[in-house]
Length: 461
Image 1 (cartoon, rainbow, N blue to C red):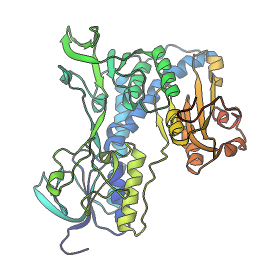
Image 2: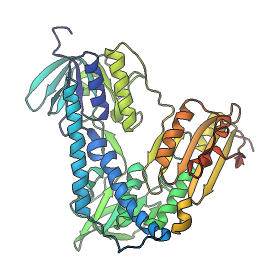
Image 3: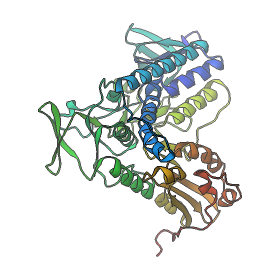
Image 4: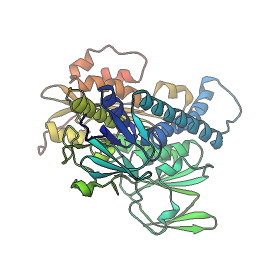
């Protein structure tokens, strides 16, 4: 390292991407400093996927208890304790935060609990202590934050997804506004835990960008679990008789105890100092980067949600690892963002890899669509109205599987395994020659033999 630099790498942000980059770079021999102004672990560990999924698990016990009677189990009516769940969840988050901190320290990374901003291409300022640090490279890994959009009168009465984890008591009635991952997941959680839940979305289907059949099926399932209102917006929020009154665009009003706005997230770039180094944001407010995560300033890189590439924790981790290997390890590689397996922890759960049907048709022209819809074996005795939907999309010319969509129990686990095959370029013939594991949900993916619908090329028919 040159004597003109205090460290080889300064990481701004202690979330999944920044922590991975810091640890890998340190492992390659770099001197690394990381600044995190809140809590090490970032959105995923502290206020995102981990605590949220713990709440998803809590909600799903309600279905398990209901199912049990069909299998001969009889017991008194279960009682849910919000405070007990919150205490256990918060303790697990604290445990994970401690692990992150110890792993960083064990890797030789110096962690500074302050806000850091960029002063020039090689300098950051720590605002708490008002000192500067010179770094050969700077990595921006500050993630994104929820936004209240559009702004309406009374917006301050609502909470965002961060605020969910601060709720000390369970609301009896909640209005969830939004139709993406976060909205449908939390709406499912609150409904399962016994809160009277209304999910309101301005669009006509949930989960924009997902396969239309899967999105429609989720909407139908949610309409049985909660008050689902599509094609609606909230015009204003007011205090009314100890409640929050939401006035909708059609004039109807809803009185609830809590309003959760989950309409989007925005990169955490405000006040970061990007203007001082000439880094301009793209139309979405994200930091533009090259495939190797380099910004327009050669010494400054960015990974994770702040880049707007794919707002998923595993992507941030991979990008951070690739950056560290490339810059400090002499092993250059880039993350392939074309095929990303992902899950929505709604109830029913959704797992996806590859294109939806509309995009697959645009990309490949002729595709074959294989579909299965059935009642899961467990529901045959429980009597619960539950369906599993599976779709496999195949490029007809090369027989390559270009999309797999699953809605049903353990869809996330299924898609993780299927994602390996799809990423490797598996064909439908590969699926067909795979022996089924019986009886399982996943066996349907390798037993579908006849295309359900044969689509014409784009613009034909």
